[in-house]
Length: 345
Ligand code: NDP
Ligand code: GDR
Image (tube, rainbow, N blue to C red):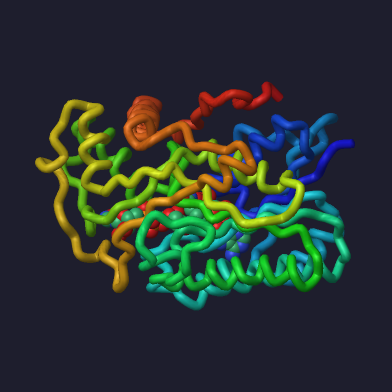
């Protein structure tokens, strides 16, 4: 029987890759999108077919994680087998400017969704997009047993959702899993996250369109992986025998400084000639280093990150150069992983 999945945040980086993965696995995929005055479906337009077309398996619905009544209506109509909760105000720096809205989406939104599942008595599995931001100032390497000490309104909100998902597992026996994902990037990464900001600037500087790139703290260390691999990990968690929490990470730390050197080197440039400091990109509290240990995911799910920072920068810089060649048209990359590729539909 065709399995039915609901993805919140389907228009985001991870949502778009996950939708592709599930469609390729034969799922019927439902996504919640927000009403906007401009198009916000660029990352999934290549997957969309008119729902009246026989065999269409992707369906989009207007909704919002701050609108609990709408979530109940949608869940009762769709009756999904699997719910992937990826929606959130996901920018850490912005969460300091908009702490209340961030908590409403990244925190309370999870309660609204889980309450809908519980009250409708749905027999479905639930994935919660938890984050390495929850570890905050706990020193690396971090794994599932590392104490949490979040350092941003975003991290605090995600920790609330993490415990909410665990509480619904323990209190009501729901199949809820927390994927504690470390930074993962791709050509579809939002342009204001540091990796994409860098690779996009590399392409523009290389083309003679920009002269400088303004950044904040370049000494921080992150564990950067490749997003298509991480959504595969999400799916594997949802298909484990029992619900649990898993870290997904590469296990390698890379500073923003090192990422800059790798990215600029792909076009033969020295980053130090182009990068300037701007304090508006600093955060009131920063996380100096996160480096994950995902040995639990490797032993229990058979998941291991393959793409590391040198390959990742190559993929992202190449995609941003290609996008410029296409006149700024967003480049819908085709991940080159086993079993990947969009069906011709
Ligand atoms: P993005 O920022 O690319 O996507 C976020 C998605 O959430 C978008 O589809 C956005 O819609 C949607 N959204 C935001 N607010 C609401 C709302 N109030 N109601 C409904 N939808 C909303 O994030 P990523 O794809 O990178 O990440 C996916 C999830 O995983 C997020 O929850 C993020 O916090 C978390 N995460 C991400 C990591 C990463 O490195 N990428 C690491 C760990 C966790 P719209 O397009 O309309 O803005
Ligand atoms: P992060 O990602 O905060 O780790 O959250 P981001 O790319 O925003 O920042 C990474 C590090 O780079 C430093 N930095 C800058 N960051 C941005 N955005 N812009 C700059 O100009 C800049 N200069 C330096 C930051 O200070 C930070 O230390 C991401 C999001 O996807 C979250 O949703 C997710 O949960 C975590 O990763 C894991």
